Image (cartoon, rainbow, N blue to C red):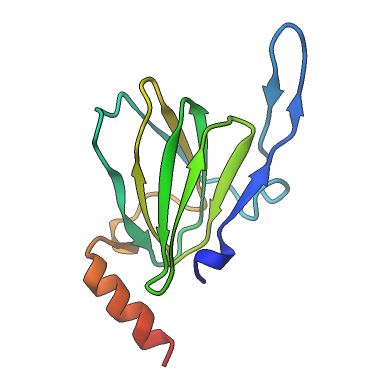
Length: 138
């Protein structure tokens, strides 16, 4: 898996003068069953969130309000993606390092995850992550 496997997914937007509606369904709009949902908010200016990769977990990230950038890195390629619409989301497969930066005031980041929290699924040291990724490619 790598940065090239990350992709923006357009979600259905049902426009209505009373307010728009968007929904996400497991294994239909995103390629996994949703087992956990969490969200980030009130992120102080200049702070970075993320800073890790997952061994097996897949995620789908949505900017529910405001905007932020997601820096993606697979140990070879590094790419930035801006999320700023609640009807677009970013699919992240396993083994992609991510950092969330440049949060606008009032930004809310929702993350849908393919499994329950498991600390053993994390790579939290970037150099270790790159070393493992490059050893798998040999």
